[in-house]
Amino acid sequence: MAGSERDGAWAGMGIGWAVTATLVGGILVWGGLGYLADRLLGLEPRILTAVGIVLGAGLAIYLVYLRFGKGEGNRGGA
Image (cartoon, rainbow, N blue to C red; front, side):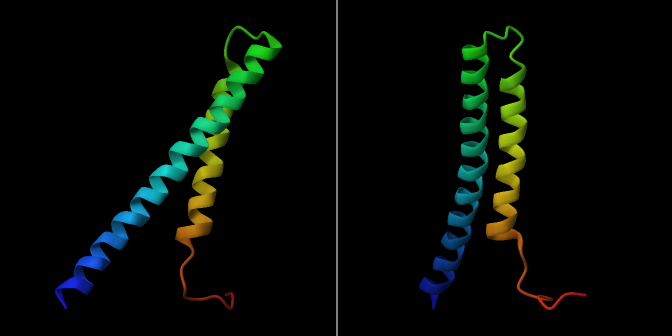
């Protein structure tokens, strides 16, 4: 019995790390692409870096919602 309770606690920890990795990964990847675009285009105020970071955060939040945020109830609609 104690093992199953402990497994449940660690399962929650795994979900937390998966959410964290998704958010950080989205920000780093899209921010990095924005930075590369800034460098290639020669833009001095790193505007595309900022756009990439914001876009990456938004897309990562959406992915977290799709994977972990949808509830099981009320799938039939209103």
